[in-house]
Image 1 (tube, helix red, strand yellow):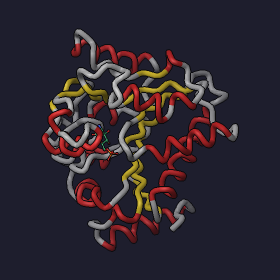
Image 2 (cartoon, rainbow, N blue to C red):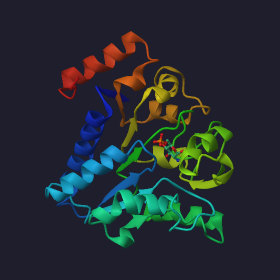
Image 3 (cartoon, helix red, strand yellow):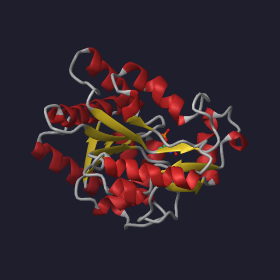
Length: 266
Ligand code: GLP
């Protein structure tokens, strides 16, 4: 696993967006579209802004990109201001040239939620699997909505949200955790781990405790993102603040690796 530390969120976002754009552009002449997994939340917003800028400059197109979002609340209609359907429209899709039929998001209003999850896994497989899964991390180390205690082999399914997550996400629901849906559909840890590459963006001091557990602790279902330690091609890109709980020697070593690779900007 690579840990790429940038001085601030803007630099981390720029690096991540450029990295993904390179991957997509390298695929442009291939015989199949690039399959990209996408998150919601505040963490990827800087990357989405960069995608839009690159698109305007003519340096990135989603015309041959198939997307699969990580998760969606159960019971929120797609046009609800806090649904992840709406989030993706507002923050990315409306300004990119992605084809509607290529942008997949779990339907949290499906009559058969288990069937919806099975169909989602089948659609990912039919697309040839995910080339790169972009993600964020919850303050408790969760990946998508794979809350602490989730199986590290899990597939797309219904999850009950923890109190921690409801409190964290209450900021989007008028500050009231009781307004946050209690359940969500989410890709599993195993679904993300099947991607050929995983890129996670982490920023801010409030993520430092979780980043320490994920990078320096053992693989543990209580910090589901720690699964990345066993992925063959995984990157966490973060800002300096998020490294506040890591050992000095850990930070130095990961920086040394990236200096040698020429990707350290700090
Ligand atoms: C939610 C999402 C996750 C996201 C996390 C962190 O729980 N399901 O995919 O990583 O929030 O959100 P933020 O980036 O706003 O800190």
